[in-house]
Image (cartoon, rainbow, N blue to C red; front, top):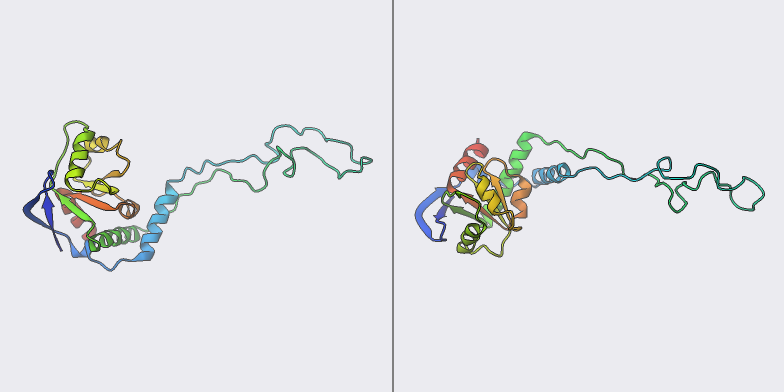
Length: 209
């Protein structure tokens, strides 16, 4: 599969790039995709949720009223779960949500996600570019030139580009990832994928192996 390369003004150049069939034209494996997305989302959870049990709730140091003779049900503390302000039964407590996943499964999931995008013609290849300093306006000009202003975008760069990354901080619809550091979830949640020409070569090499 070959795609045209666009310049930063949105014009098609005379160059074409090859998308490896081993990466962008495989039969997608949906279960691997699900496993990887579940892993990514689980690993992003902080796991710091906490509610107080009856032993941690404030107060309730003494018996609220005597055991017998009141006509009421006996009570040992006002911090029991059935009292207002009492502790919670089986409430959340801090835990680690990290889920591991086999490297081969993760690789297959990324290739499957990219194959879906390639099949739907959602991948745009642009020439390599970098910024000398963070410029949100420059990034917006590139997106508008490619007619992608209304789309959520994943931009895959040729190596770590701190200035490009900083230029998208105020653009909530654009995510920037290194060519080897993107996840299946990054690919699936984006409407369009912009790939720098140099990044595409790295993706072909790393995922096709």
